Structure formats: C-alpha cells, structure tokens
Amino acid sequence: PTCDVENSVCSPELELIDNTQRRYNPVNLKCGVTVQLGENVLRDSPDIIDIMNHDLTSCLSVLPASVGWLVKRTHIWVNRTYAYGNIHAPTVVSHSTAHHFPGWLLWVQDKAEKEASIEIYNSVEYLNLRLHYNGCGLMLHELCHIIHQTTLPGGLSNMLVIEMHKIAKESGKYSRVLRRDWALNEVDTDVAYCTLNHKEFFAEISVSYLSDFYHDVDGTGTVDMAKCSPPFVSPVVLGRMQQKHHIRNNGKSLV
Image (cartoon, rainbow, N blue to C red; front, side):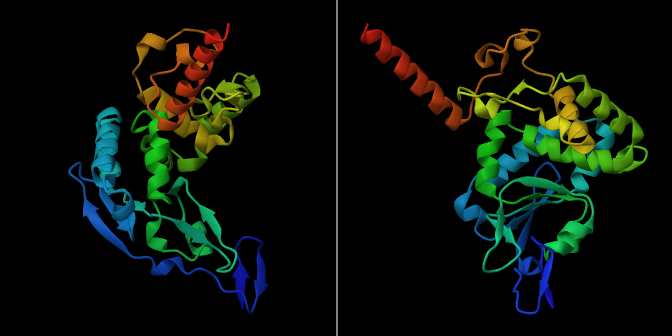
C-alpha cells in the first residue's frame, strides 16, 4: 500500500508524486556555492544564476568568515514548481526552506541527499519575495537555519536559543509588528515571524543583527511604515504606492 502524506491515510490505490525523479543540473557559482537547477528554471527565470550569485556573495560578506566553509558546502536546490502527495490532488508549495533532516524528504518522496541543504520550491516566487528584503535577506535567513543546526552547541536544541525565544514571545513586544510585504495595505501589521518557534527566532534575529544597514531609519519609533522602513523595491509595494498617490491626487483635484 501507499500512503497519503497529507492526511496520513494508507491506500493500495493512491498514487504519489515521485520527486526522486526530479532532474537537476549543478552550476558552480563564482562565489563558490553550488546551485542545483531544476527543469525550466532558466527558461522562466533567466537571471536566476546572476541573482543567486549576488545574494550568496552578499551573505558571505556579512557572515563571519568562520562559517564561509559551511555556506560554500551547502547546496541550493532550485525548482520552477514543486508539489507532493496525491498525484490527483497534489499539495503545491512555493516557499524556500532549509532541510535539516531526511525525514521530510522521504515523506514527500524526494531525494535524501538534499539533507543539510536549502531548497527553493519556486524560482519565480523567490525572485519576487527577495525584493521585500531588498536583496539577500531571504537567502541569509535560510543559511542561518543551517548555521544554527551545524555550529551551535546542541544544534537546533541549543538551550540558550530556546530560552531567548521563550522570553521574547512572552514579552509581548513582537505580537504586532510592521510587515514590509503588507506595506500600504489596510492592515500592515502581524505577529512577528520570529515568535513561531525557536528555529525561526534564531534565523530572524540573526538576519536583523547581520543586516547592519539603513541607519537613517534607526530609532524612529514610529508605526508609519514609510518613515521607519528602508526603501521599497518590490513592484507589488511600489504599485500600491502609485495607486495611493493617484487616489490622493484625484481627491485633491475634486476639492
């Protein structure tokens, strides 16, 4: 019998997507990192190699030199699209993730060799999302997961990280924070992602610590996104800004 990975139900008739058959072509970037490009990635994201090299070079420039070897040995698997589970009702994912252990990979019928690596499930979505971080922040976040597991005493079970996450969550300071990807929406705040669990806490605070830029907006103490956030480069947010500007100007012209 085979099993429905989504609902954990076994059925002799259920057909599962076999992700072990995915084909990848290795590309050695100038920065020393190897990316594994899946089918149709270059067709739909022709700039992906240059952008990945830019992001990883930026990550290497802000991370301690002592973890450079770890970054360069971490493979990045890039897919155009990705789905798992029932072949007739698949679960489609488009985020990026760090693979800590082979369990998840085996569960979704994928290659166990992806353990201790980073996977981008949708190359087009990655190129869009990275703009909310003005560049390498998204990749830096995933690398910090690998660093957490590999270099800290106790790895992902490091007690100091677990305790700091507990203190931060219970403080209430992170229950309502601004979200750059929601900028200029009617609601632009959310619970901070770092409160989700201790692993996300370490990755998020590490990115905040390492991204030592945009000091002109330090300490503004405002909930006005435009005043306390670095410049926006995402076309989605810029489109909202243009729309707001258009509505504001039209409103003035009617007065």
